[in-house]
Amino acid sequence: MLQATLFASLVVLVIVIIPWNFKLERDAWYRQPTLRQYLEQFPHCRSARGIECVHCGSSSIRNWGRYNAASAQRTFLCNHCGTRLYRSAD
Figure 1 (spheres, rainbow, N blue to C red):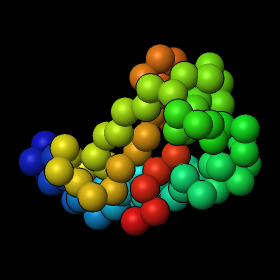
Figure 2: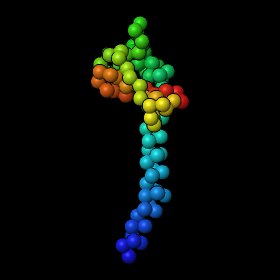
Figure 3: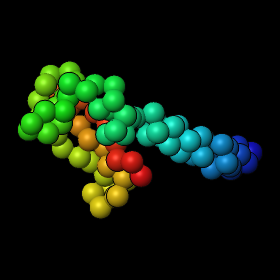
Figure 4: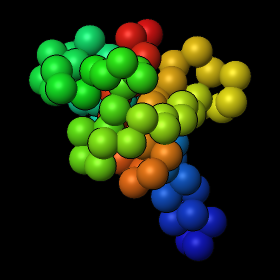
């Protein structure tokens, strides 16, 4: 009986929860603005030194791969306050 319950839980995990988690992650990715959208929303964040953080004004921005360091899809974050600013355009 315990094995059947464990198996049923594993099936639910694989069929329902894992795909649902991927959907949530994908939706969160596309809710982030692209650089173009970020600058349309915050035009004052474009400066002579480059792009600035809307929250703290820092122009020190790091980028992280969506899946790993070599990922082409990137998220750009403020190095000073850690705010997610924008994403690559795919």
